[in-house]
Length: 193
Image 1: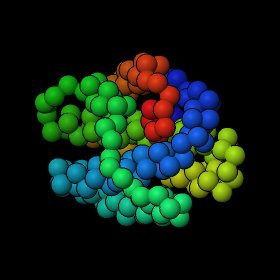
Image 2: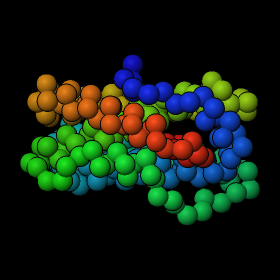
Image 3: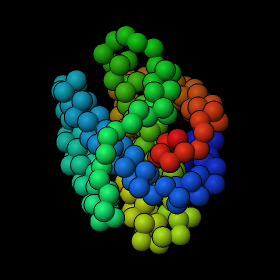
Image 4: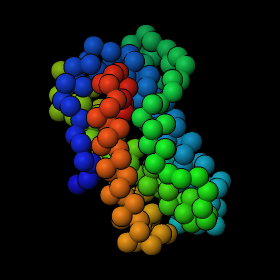
């Protein structure tokens, strides 16, 4: 369903289980960045009323996810700490050329968001199926469903606002590009690494 060209190595879950604090901190910042992305789309493209409406709902959902993850951090006696650079996201952004029309910029941002949501969904599924901690596994199962909905929403908007054939071609090229990123990144205690 997600169309990802390279699945996550299941051994990534072993890294996660040894570094739960790090993964939760990284996850919290992912949720915060997803909130910021939705707000940025509202600010940058206010004339797309249907997009604005969906982004308002997404802001509420993503910030609630941030709170849920932050609550887990606090329950374990940890603190959020400082954000770290997301190597995965930095590499994905290299796929998109700078400039272009407003519509092109919007489509690129929507495709970028769709990809991140798709990879998050895939990782959350893996966590939901493989984590020894069943409570945490259930937590990720619920979030997996949300990520799948976000992925389809962003991809749907890209197809709605851009030329469908061009968007689909660019999406396939982005999936190929992302597979190469996943091959080269080391497995670490981050949501996307």
